[in-house]
Amino acid sequence: MATSPVSSGSSLDVASIVGQLMQVERQPLTRLQAREATALSRLTSFGRVQGAITALQAASQSLNDLSDFNGRAASVSGSGVAAAAVSTALPGQYAIKVSALAQAGVLSSAAVEATSTQVGTGTLTLQLGRYDSGANSFTAKSDAAAVAINIDSSNNTLAGVRDAINAANAGVTASIVNDGSGYRLTITSKDAGAVNGLRISVSGDGDGNDTNAAGLSQLAFDPTLAAGSGRNLTQTLAPQDASFTVNGLAMTATTNRVSEALPGVTLTLLKADNDAISNVTVIRDTNSVRTAISNFAKAYTDLRKVIGEVTRFDPSTRQAAALNGESSLRQLESLLVRTLSGSVTAASGDYQRLSEIGLRVNRDGTLNVDATTLDTALQDVDKVGRLLAGSNGAKGIAAQVSALADQLVGTAGIVTARTQGLQRQIDQFNKAEVSLNRKLSETQQRLTRQYSRLDAQLSSIQTQSNALGNALAGLSDSRGQS
Image 1 (tube, rainbow, N blue to C red):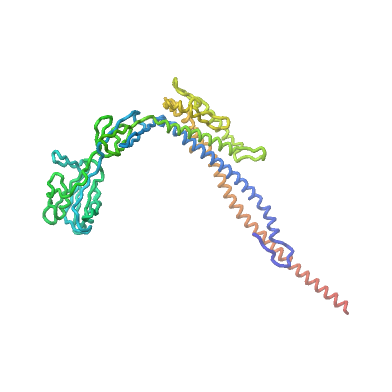
Image 2: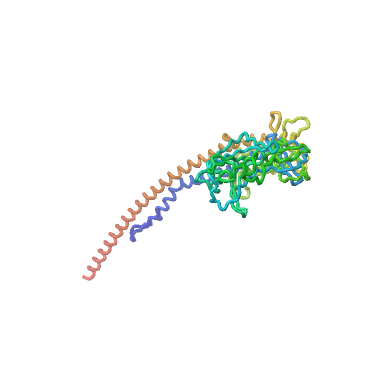
């Protein structure tokens, strides 16, 4: 803390003196800050290493399970369907013909003048189910209970009925449309399929008749009854199942997303056309494996690059990186090279080394991928899977790298322990720095007070000396005149 001289007559520059003394006092703090900066630099460098190891672990984990090599891809020629396959799908080709798409049923009321038009009071009961036109029968859906909705003077308008139906969670959606002739209530099943047809019955109609086309019963719809006598809504779309064939075998589904027809393959029916065939081809998906192997090679190369940067020594400048001489990183590099250059126990005819599938560790620390050799190896992706993931209880190379990474960055990992130790050290430095700064502030204040008092004393002495000198000079002058 800088302080100016107390008086103009002082011969001391208090601020300069205290400043020079504080430079000496701050030397322990400077040394502490230098140690903290070194620890921070090492922590940052270990953080980079930890991030690179974690990336390598993630890349290796996508190759350390045999199921990772069982991917399937589905392609489609034709516009009738889309297809997606999972690992359980059997490779093959399937001819799909779609004759009908699944659709939800839609009912519509007669037109009225306004959404505020009153439509009557009573109880609407909605039931999902399947209508059989041949037997003229309606069978309630087994897992959908009937829902009763009370319509009274508070909600007996067209808009009020719409809102009451939507609030009832009855498996349908009610809307109001204006087709130019007036406002109509439409009721649509939320799910497609013939099993999601709708029956609406009315009880307690305010006009005393539960089936005619007046009052609340104008919203009744029982497909087994006559029009105008309980079947008073108009069915504008009939609920319908999807109809299609797979390799000539006829099938139906309640939705247009079908996962049961071909195990492991989900078909999405897009367009009905009795004359069009869409061919679905399911193959082994080697592209995802190829990408995973490339990612693994890149992650390894990136890790070696990071280790090289944080341990580098530049002889021209005599400058060493933060982790130069860190033995644990040299051991890590050695373990990685040994693992990737080593062999695995394999059955006769299987791959034993990465080099056999086109992966080679170079002297500069990179892991090179020979695309031609890899493509050839992936013609038998199961053999590649056993090399990388392992089999019969033996770990493959990717599985070994994943396990090694866990030893380094897991909860009890070496790198984890080093970063935690450095962080504790930095925390201790911070506490010590706070304490030293407090003491330095106290010391600076004490020195300023001391030298300010000395400055004041010297100023007083100087003043007294000047006064005495002036008095003696005056006395001498008076004697000379006499």
